[in-house]
Image (cartoon, rainbow, N blue to C red; front, top):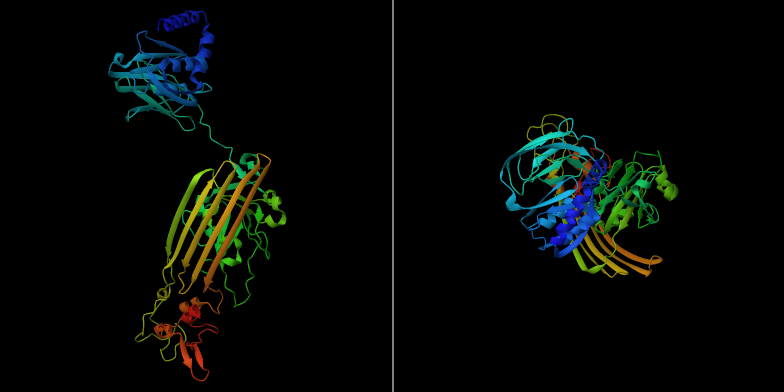
Amino acid sequence: MKKKTIRQSKRLIISLFVTFFCLTASAAQAQTALVTIDLQQEKMVQVMDEIENQTKYLFIYDKNMDTGRLVNVHVNKRPVAEALDQMVKGTDVVYEIQGSNIILTVRSQQTDGPKVVSGKVTDNKGDAVIGAAILVKGTTVGTSSGVDGVYTLRIPEVNANTMITVNYLGYEPIELLVGTRERIDIVLQEQSLGVDAVVVTALGIKKQEKALTYNVQEVSGSIVNTVKDANFVNSLSGKIAGLQINASASGAGGSTRVVMRGVKSINGDNNALYVVDGIPLPSLRSKQTEGIYETPDGGDYEGIANINPEDIESMSVLTGATAAALYGSQGANGVILITTKKGQEGRVRVNYANNTTFSSPLVMPEFQNTYGTSSDAPSMSWGEKLVSPPHRYDPEDFFQTGFDETNSIGITAGTERNQTYFSAASVNTRGIIPNNVYNRYNFSLRNSAVLLPEKLTLDLGATYMKQYSRNALVQGIYHNPLIGVYLFPRGDDIRKYQLYERYNAGLGYSEQFWGLEFINGVENPYWVTNR
């Protein structure tokens, strides 16, 4: 301990010969110094030596202070104050920084009582910081810096642990021990934000987002897994700027039309290109029949709808002509890049997820039940005032409560050079139209192996999908149950048509029971949904 005191005395004597300019520069550099210390159950004096070796700070303390006590300090390129906080934690030692000196005292030497602290808040360029918030830690007592950066803070009671916190938008928040000081000048450091995001562009090539000359939006896989849909593309609605999502009216499992930044072709396909792990997916969309006949639209008409959303690691959305050039004319309407999950190094991990949603009609047209034609010859929903309507018909009664239940399990394991990922998922959906059902089952297996480090990697993946769709809603007039539901005559009772078939002895089989011809081609909605 005597050797330490003699060494400290020599440093103080030498410092008397340093010019004022050098003292100022040393103090400024000391305030911004960062240290890296990793010591477990080491003597406090060893931590002090590390700080002195890595910075221009010098310790001043009483020779009777016990600096041989064991402490733990773990910091990596962090301000000196954080290392000091860890060093004195759980001890009776407190510190204060004055210029390039760190003064250590025993807590019992601190006196309680009110105190007025003042100083100036500046940034690392020496400019005054206006409106910085200075608070007594753990209390609501505080003030703010003025137009010249100067502040005055009255602390009702000061003890050995009293600290002030300084916060300002765009700067790193700091904490300072008050100690015996009455003037505390504060230097704020600008807060650095990470801008080195890496995105996948084409053919699995990874680039820094800030280095690209075109617009790329990165979307995490959690976006499509928060609230699942039978077609996960519907979950992107409102999540990506400039992306227009048009879900089909075909019920559960229907395809989705994705248009980026407006329609680009009058008579062509404006749908975006999907690329999964570097492989472009072909467009499986069927062409709808023109006129009043239309074919049902199911998820099998769009390959992207068959993907298990739990397998998605991230998505990159490329828009603009420059981005489209990566995939030629296929990407003229924009590209959605999907990166699926890989196995992870480590022990076996199992993830299970369940998502269940219910749906019902939100807004219905308003219908009247006062006027119509008689029940003997019903044809329209307007006419004379009905004397006694046989049934107060509400089209909303035709719909049912739909649900969408998704269950998925993912298993991952691997070593440093070989990782495996397996997943299985089931989607069971019932639409709001009666008898509308969509079921899908996904199985995926992927194995990644490093054959030659940094030279040759083998990545194998296989996916199996099985889906079943029943009674997908058809648009147009024929075979669309909603036409009959909405235009059913108010003078008639729709309940008798719920028995949608009657046996025809002449034909030898059951035929549709309807008989209404208020619009040519409209059929019994119950027969349409069941037959």
